[in-house]
Amino acid sequence: MVKSSEPALDRLFAALSDPTRRGLIARLAEAEDATISDLARPLPISLPAVMKHLDVLDGAGLIARRKDGRSVHVRLTPAPMEDAMAWLARYRQFWGESLDRLAAAIEDRA
Image (cartoon, rainbow, N blue to C red; front, side):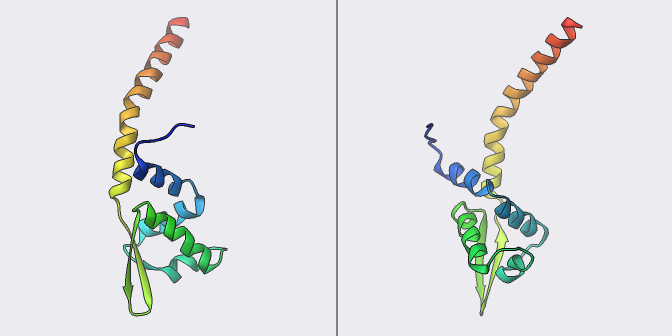
């Protein structure tokens, strides 16, 4: 098993690995601010299960929570996603060059 030296990136990708959490992120991207009840309402899982998913997103730094009376509001925090995009960009050049070489090799054979 390969150990990463970037635990924040590990938490981010682990948080994004679940489709329910990706769905929550998508909903938060559409709305600037949502209550936990609003986020949980359309999901076929219990409120405690939604809270656990939000805890994982919070641990990855993807959301921020704010309590307003009895309601807890959640909003997306984009900085961890920007870090992931920067990490992925390092490999975009490698894959782009590799695919360009493959395309050239295929064209040479034709």
